[in-house]
Length: 102
Image (spheres, helix red, strand yellow):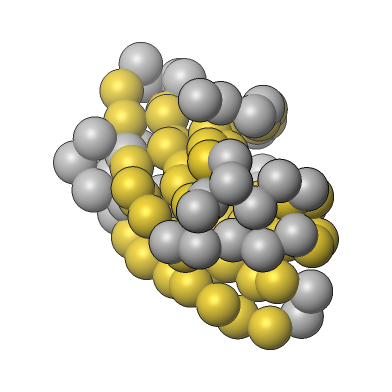
């Protein structure tokens, strides 16, 4: 069984980004949502991922109201329904990066 989780880090301040709303879509269907905790984590947006194309939508405008990006969208593919998929977001007011974590 696989799962999808995320972690948002504020690289400008060097700390977790708390209170960021995140939604998870499979194709165009909303299948999970949550808000980052004090550690910047949402441990499980979806407990059992099946193969397909997913999209995480981070509403970052509330976290960085004077920032450039109101939202960040990350699309990714789940190919192994037994693996865990952790998708971190490293965020600053004027840039972001992501990768497949563990």
